[in-house]
Image 1 (cartoon, one colour):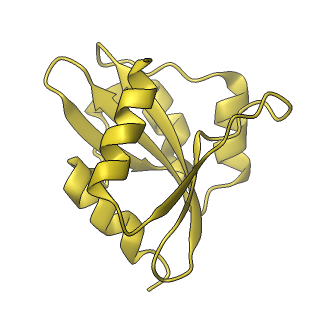
Image 2 (tube, rainbow, N blue to C red):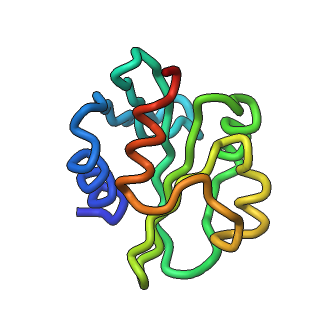
Length: 122
């Protein structure tokens, strides 16, 4: 099982109130990994990333997607060493690509991330 699949399973456990759909899409490069639907009836996407260091690897298509869709898009990153999970708004992908995990996240930890995602549109 890949590292991003493990992160997805952990996220799903922490957010039973959110309906998650994994997007397995080869026809639209850069499409985020997850489509979420929260208790307020709000849709959003989440790109999952797992990294061993400070740098996060994005494809040009992933960057383009988040630049073109700055609202209701998120990037969740798990740093393997400390096991830290951080959530970033998709609108900050250029900064995240340049700064890596040094960029301040909008949420730290799976519980806080779940609360923020469930509160969207409320």
